[in-house]
Amino acid sequence: MIWHIFKKDWKLLWPLVMGVAAAHVINSVLALAVGFFFEGRGLTQIYNVFPAVLLLGMSGLVIAAIHQDVLPGDRQDWLIRPIRRGDLIAEKLIFVLIAVNGPMFLVDVVHCLIVGLPFSDAVSAALSRGIFFFFSFGLPVLGLAALTSSFIEAMGGFLAIFLIGTVIRIGITVSTPENAATFANMNDGEMLKEAWSVVALAATFAIIPLQYFRRATTRSRTIAFGAVLVLPLVAFIPWSAGFSLLQRLSPDPSAATPVAIVFDPNLGRNEAPGSGWRPNSIWLPLRISGLPADSIMLDDRTIVRIFSRDGALLYRGPAIGTAPVPLMTVSNAPAFLDGFPVHALKGENVHTYKLIGLPRQILEQVRNQPVHMEVDYALTLFRVETSDSIPALNGNKRIPNLGLCRTKIDDDGDEVLFGCLGARPVVGCGILTLKNVVSGRQNPVPPLASSCSRDYPLITAHFVSNAMDMIHGKLMFRDPRGLAKYPVDASQLADAQVLVRTYRPVVHFTRHLSIPEIRLGDWEAATTVAATSPAQ
Image (tube, rainbow, N blue to C red; front, side):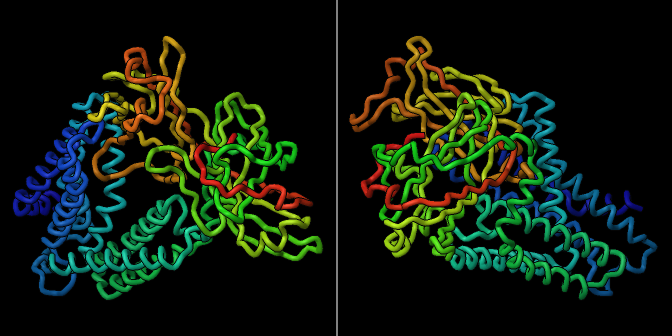
């Protein structure tokens, strides 16, 4: 019976199946056209928008397949036929896998092969994208379609859920301070999206059996409405709970065991050029030990508590106060950089400064008197994963963990463009350096703060916009204004290589720092405008 139902659906829907398959081909052609460096502004804009059109078409195909045998109501002719409900639901799932996921999988494999990925990588990337699409998008759309009796109803429900989710997200963004310790702003909001996907999938697993085996439409719609109401509650899960989950899922929990952070007054006050940030802030001198060789440590969140000598709590808040730290200026020069991330090249002790912004009244109150300070760090340790190089001029090389990489000079003639297409998502930190391999000269390394991500997705698969992961970067070798001179300039590019190093998170952990007595005025930051990064 499953095969008979499938043939019936295919005869009715094959034009729509072909149309969606053609949209997959167009999407792939657009991706190939923008290439490694997103060339062509107009084409890039179309490429960025087209996946939304593709998702709309795939949603319409899933809804149309389900509505061939409508579930709500009691006037559908299939109800009087001897059709097992299990056969019907099995056919709908198979149809989605073959007619919706099938073309996407085939186009993804061909796309990856055209780019130059090995067959095994191409199949792996296409398969992971297909599986992720099926569970995070296909099944929820199927569940929504099972609750409705027409395409208009289904799209109306989809639009309502989208609008409700958007309003909730905007409300959370407006009502929640940027530094508030909530799940909503963790990992740049990516963990919240994953949590919402889990809620949607859980609701779908409840709705589909209820609809297909009992046709309990009222109960199923109540579950769907309840899932929508749960979404804002998920956003206010404590930040610490989310970080605790990351700790438990760390690939190598023991890697951070020897890491220690201590207050080191012998380092002296931070007088480095550009060390100022704003009034009412201090640079806390720190010594960090126990870091593995060629590793990076990033602070995900730092909470500061200040107590008077009699133990009264004077202040509690994030280390950067109420305003975010700008990481880069328009000219790509570092501005107002914190002392984190820290990079331990040889695993030796690292001396750095932690920037702590305080309310003006608090600093004025305790500037010249001893206080007790406690600092709680939520940290992530990264280990080097990829270390390779590629020619700066028209390089074309396969780099492990990144995929096929290329380089070229941009149209303005002042930057080396670096781009990679690979089957494996890159998560963590990346460092690109332009070096003359003959003379040994190299251009300044961009600040780590601009090349490290605090996004640690639990699921690295994706279904937008194609199966491959794309990374790209720029390395300046000429200042169009003529103000800066680079050690490696245009005349040396023939002998230059782009050095590529990537770092992957291996453990999330916490550390507690207690300073029994400190006079904050001794470590107060200057208020000059930053021009360079602080010493690390």
